[in-house]
Structure formats: structure tokens, C-alpha cells
Length: 209
Image 1 (cartoon, rainbow, N blue to C red):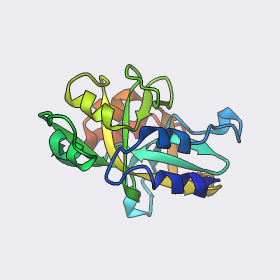
Image 2 (spheres, helix red, strand yellow):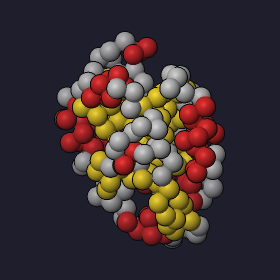
Image 3 (cartoon, rainbow, N blue to C red):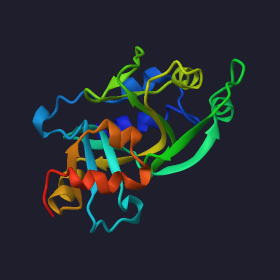
Image 4 (cartoon, rainbow, N blue to C red):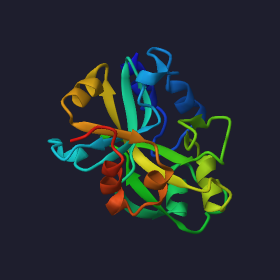
């Protein structure tokens, strides 16, 4: 099942943020394992001994985690600023291009052509996926337009790509202490200086070194 819904994710965006309903449908409900066992809605923090350079000092907001695998978005890897005009042009153009810039993040090494918008829960569309009480994810061109028009969520983060794990893979990495976990913190996801996010997250980890 995990591979099936990842393959569906690959159909979502030609460049970024295509039909929103597809992403919402592609993400399964977390019913396969007890809720307390799922890390969805928590932060995953790379341990200092992390051997994979792709994840060195990364902090990941977990979006989905069940018996078939897991998906999360790295929140502390800013890549570049892009104009809203160029970003919206990439997803099909439309109305007059809005002004302003948006920071683009590297959300993970898997399928970097796929885009995601993490945001605060004050914004909601039919396709919005609630992650927890602090954070949601909406995948549509409309959210970009709303952000550009200052009508979007109070806080947001636009990322390309994601971190993904197959069945049992994340659990194995946790047993090897490659990762720590911490409760979701909106300040770490959206506000904190990106260069300080990993250090701050480590202070709140739930496991000791």
C-alpha cells in the first residue's frame, strides 16, 4: 500500500501544486496501527551521528506514519527565494501575477518535483489535511494565490520533495538511534531562524543521547 500511495503522489504535480484533491486522496488515514504508535504530527530530529549526509542536522515534520511506511517534510533546508509570479507560472499561469517572493525549502530527497505547503491551522480548504492541532497541509494552486494576496494562512512553508520510509524502515532507524523525536512546535516549523532549528529541536527531544 505504501508504494501505491507514493506512486499516486508522483502524479500530483508536474512542477508544484497540481490538483489538490489527488494529494488528499493519496494520503491514507492512519488506521493501521494504534494512534499512540504513530509519529504523525511530531518532529523527527536527526541525531548528531546521522551518517546520511542528505539528513545531516535535519528536522522533519511527520505528516503520515503507519504500518506501511512514513512521510515527512524537512523544515530547515531553505533553498532559494522565488517570485510568486514564476511559481504560479510553473503551475499553469492564470490571473495577473501577484507581487512578492516566497522561500522554497527542500522537503526531502524523494521526488523533489512534488510540492507541499505546510501551514498554520487558521487556513482551511476542502482539500486541507490536518496534521495536528498546530499544523496542516494544503496542496493547491489556490493556497499560493491566497498567500501572495495576503489572504492565506498566518504561517506557511513551501517545500519540494519529501522524506519517505518503507514499512518498518523508520522504526529500524529509530532503534539504531539515528533519529530523536519531539512534539510539534509551530515556532520551530515556521518562525525560528532556520540555522537554529536543529539546535532548538534537540533541546526538546524526548530521548536522551
